[in-house]
Image 1 (tube, rainbow, N blue to C red):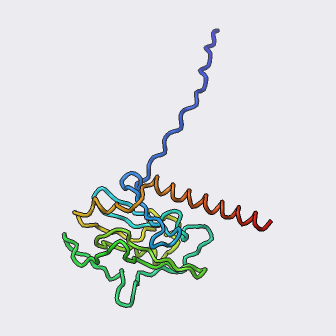
Image 2: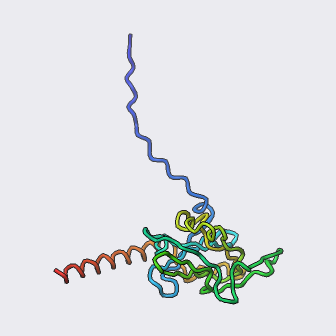
Length: 195
């Protein structure tokens, strides 16, 4: 009776993670410190058909642990509500036109903080996410998918230039890393002064 030597078990290389729908079809762009407010970062998901989905970046204070969203309002002023945006037809008639700094909504947290979310891109407002009005927690749980803020369609002739002034994923990560290093250095400096 002959026994064949067993084949040694060779560990397989880890399978690369399957990219999410967002990672597959959208390019992520970021706007850091919107309107000069520290860490109030927004993420713009740009599809190849030039549609832009406005979301919160991972470093936004609303997405940090411990924050609870009390309410969200698309009522920008007494005369302007993003909920009244009614788009129709091939040429998107009735869509509100937005500038880069146009407010989309306001987020009110239980700690009294209020955050205004801006468009970050010029274009026509196609839709706002009414689901986050009824269930604000999805904004924190799934900010890039079900918790998006709004969908904006830039003008065709401006679709290439809208990314000017926005950061790539890598540039954004560098900004967040610099912030982290600055806060770490500041907290160390405070400790040594106290001692």
